[in-house]
Length: 225
Image (cartoon, rainbow, N blue to C red):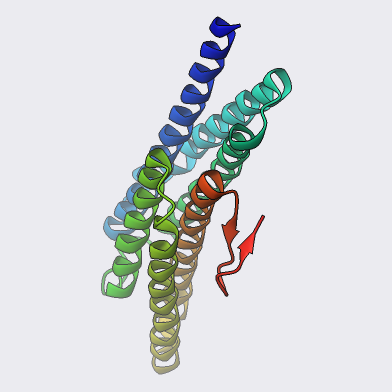
């Protein structure tokens, strides 16, 4: 029996490492997509689109692994929360990979680096969401639920930057109709980054769920079981 439980603990540890590796893949995809955007790098953008299948496959493998543990080990209490949270967090990371792919697919539409360069607001959002994702993954590994509140504050700042980007690009498009195409694509980039911030914040909520058995509401701080 002891040997069986030790094997189960190893399986849980392996599952967590799969999740953290998936997080690194998603983070790398976002960083490379933004680099491709800044430099108008079509080859890199196409490579990111192709690599999204790797993220999807890793997500599927993790979920299948988790489902096997649920079926064969019948975990309860903390272990059940842990496995369920890993499944949910993997889905968040898979979506982050999709947002990175979406940014990469926009690169050819610019026909080179964006005219005037990438707006500072997008660069700020990119830096913030990169930090948020890494903070969420580190908190997951450390089982540190205090990250949840910090991520919510940082997500508010990302949302504010996106609102400012909307106002900025709409004003530019109104002044110069030739900027409508570029402005629209930049707003899609901003939208994807804003959603990445939301997904990172969700992962922070799952850390709280693992440790405390509750998830705090994004809007009012109330707890969800």
